Length: 108
Image (cartoon, rainbow, N blue to C red; front, top):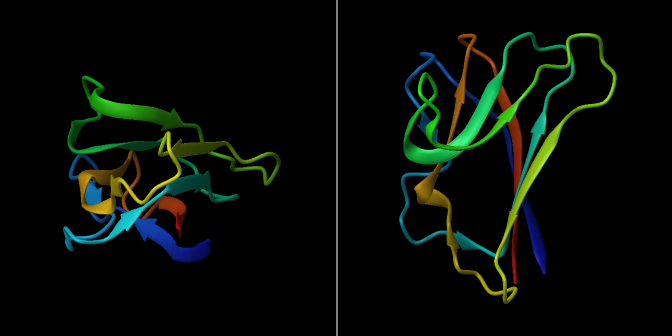
């Protein structure tokens, strides 16, 4: 299994989800999202068409960690361990411009 870090995926304009990739061929067996210590706004993981205001298409709301303590995480994993998760179907949104999440994925 190989690990790939997308690093910090930032949201330029809150309310406009940022896809993990625009390449529809990149697949993974696991996705991992982590709040970055020191940021101040809520972040959202979901589908590329999510609407954070109504939570439609949102899979998880992650709370900020402004004080540098425990950082919330969220994980998506294929049931059979195969590369069946298309990264282009997932996105990040945020309440604060310029904030985002740390994103890592694995391929088998």
